[in-house]
Image (cartoon, rainbow, N blue to C red; front, top):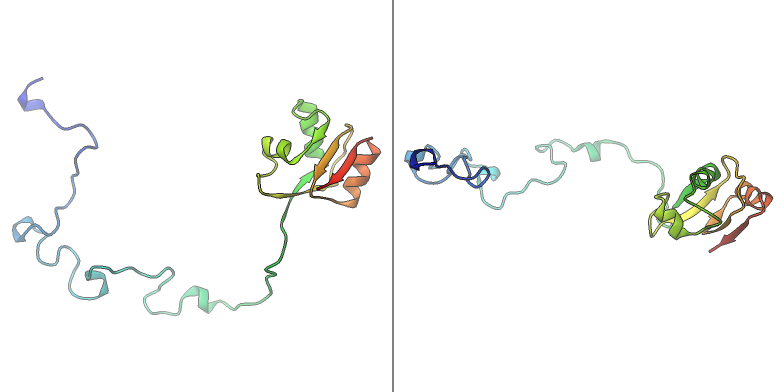
Length: 149
């Protein structure tokens, strides 16, 4: 290594335009912002969805329907998924919210509803927020217990 082949570590220096460093730099004067207008001024920020004064898409599209603010969303877990976990040996006899979170079928703060799709052969004691009628019947038919939180 000698003086003629020294160079800074990669990523440690910037190699871009040096703006507002005088006319000799080629980027003086307007500092690459053009002439006048909002975009040339400091503090400019464009609003989300702004289309240059044209009526924005979000306002052009017709609105309809109703959104219930009090709707309660449940994460559905089918019986066949539970049976699959039993077959893999990840679930033994009790299923709680913690077990479902551990197996990535739900998140920590989710409300969980067991759905009746699929077949359950294993005897499981399941404790979650809600069950469909068919799921509850299938769990009890397999000798398990369905407990609502």
